[in-house]
Length: 487
Ligand SMILES: [Zn+2]
Image (cartoon, rainbow, N blue to C red):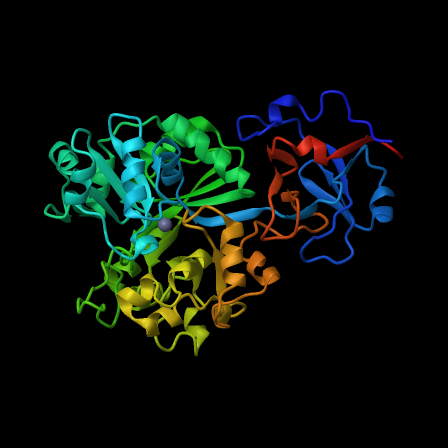
């Protein structure tokens, strides 16, 4: 017998998101689970309000006399994800602009520009390593589009290319190569600020994309005060911790699920943009120094500490990583973001890293393969040594984030599980342990995802945050069989 209670799941939760939160699953039992990380022989899970109150065999859980039973019909359950390095503004821009993350050639790029409907062609997500390394420039863009301004931001956000029309209209300030139409860092934001967009729609769609990926906790690493206001109005139903890219005295207040966590600063740029700081020269002979001194990092960390906030230092090249780690010495509990190229000595003696939290991006391993972006820019030795996640696991305070490249914990887990070098690779369980909000335990928070198979090669059917469904895939009703109280 299987009876679906009238009106449940409510029609409004189909393809639901933060806007469409269904009634709290006051008491439910999920049965027929096949997989649950960190627990063996778990067949069922009993949720009461925000908590998991029982976990174990079906018999044991049913003995707690649940009011409702939901048969997952063979689906799997995992703890919900925490993406500890992402950018909601990037996702919002992506949602309302030209998505270039799947463009695989310059011809495809041209076609995408021509096919975009709108007065300004704002695109995001190109990566020249997908088509052999030729960076699109002003002349190329002019050959494709002269009438409308074209602004295309690289996947890493550190560099953008503009056509002549866009250069004339937006007049970017800062690091600008007008000849090639390339603008870097602050110059990218000076252009972006001038392009009108529907921020409300962008934020709503970004939050929908987040819960669709099974993410219930997101650390935004570069929030601005104006985006924060839009986010406050959207009232996200998941936890957002924001690290602002602004001055201390400009920090706003948090509210509800929105927390002001700290400040984000840059010790360098990225390998893709050619401004990550290494102790050795790039393949073309250039050397890049860190953007900050150790003393400056230390001063910022002390200030954060005095305000009860956390400092997050972006550091990719080994020289920047050393600056961040040494600058944070004496102020425990701050973060280093990316940590891709580890300075000599740290892997051998990880006690040197005890005072920092390290947030890495397993998906960045996609640039480490032979002949890939990292090898081309900084040589095969560095490429082989980058992102030593396997070597750091269990020895440092490690968490994962996607940096929206792409926004997908499943993609990151798949990448690190399949990494070719043992010092970069993790097993599925270890990879997942760095990407979850909290393990599912009795008495713990009921935040989990329902999937149609085992991670990472599966689809996410439902995302639950503190006992509430914040996302349900459209066809979920065919999967769930909901019984009325059977006890
Ligand atoms: Zn980032």
